[in-house]
Amino acid sequence: MNPTEPAPALSTTRRRVLVGGAAAAASLGLPLTAWGDARPRMRPTAPTTTTTTTSTTTTHPERQTMSTFTTRDGTQLYYKDWGTGPVISFSHGWPLNSDAWESQMFHLASNGFRCIAHDRRGHGRSSQPWNGNDMDTYADDLNELFTALDVKNVMMVGHSTGGGEVARYLGRHGSARVSKAVLMGAVTPIMLKSPNNPQGLPMEVFDGFRQAYLADRAQFFLDIASGPFFNFNRPGAKVSQGMIQSWVSQGLMTGHKNAYDCIKAFSETDFTEDLKKIDVPTLIIHGDDDQIVPIAGSALLAAKLVRKAELKVYPGGSHSLGDTSRERFNADLLAFARA
Image (cartoon, rainbow, N blue to C red; front, side, top):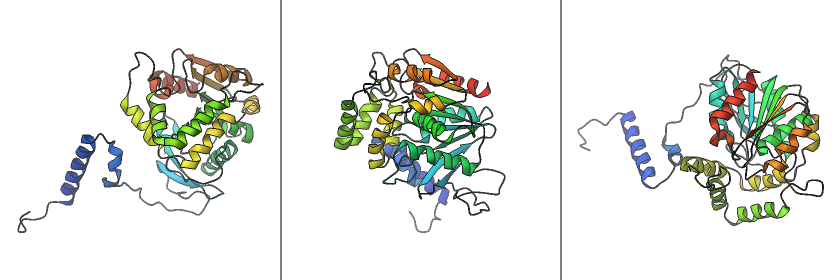
């Protein structure tokens, strides 16, 4: 640069850096999220706050669209809070985070609902505590968040491990704040095979998960996302590299021990008694080609245990119906929420 020339405007310099960084990332095959630190960070205007159990309780009439909440044991949970209207909560699967629900949250918030989704402890942007990686604590964390936000008549939606979280919440804390529930590809009533559950998966399957995870968790995540999670290993499947990269990037955000412990939580927890206690209308949705949580040992059994259950089976559906059957799943959620 000629020293006699004026320096370019900051916005121009920053723009060149961002464009150049994005181009470099693309040329290396890297996701653009790798350049997240180079982007200008948008911070919400600091509202007037009061000291409560939430770290960002505000007296301003507009809620923040994302925030953090600290539980009684000091774990910080990240959550999103989009839209206004009747409340719908979302509990994600392993080893993902609330980003997995963005298509559903956008659709429902655009249609008059308030959508709340948190990153489970140890996942995403939440804290990574050494302890508490179990279904009881997951449900208690969610109850604390509901209490702090003082939400009522919530329609709870849970996918996979998140479906277990919803069931354990209702079994442990009741339905005083809940109006409806949706279990999609859920691990209920129990995944593990036993004399009482002959249709479950043998322990060797989950031991294999743990061994592969410890050996090379990045490759393990890539193998799951590239194959059985989205059914991309089926003949004629339309493979999305974007979905694969998103899944792996979310998985790698989990705490190492948190994700390891969660394998036991989602596979060995028995939700039978929780399902029997559910007393709100419940929609159970499952793909009949779910390779992660086979339908015979999950949804078909769960539908018989929940008193007010409606079962919808998606022919050929994968484990991740929110992605591979997005339009139908979003429409079913909206119809159930409006019913």
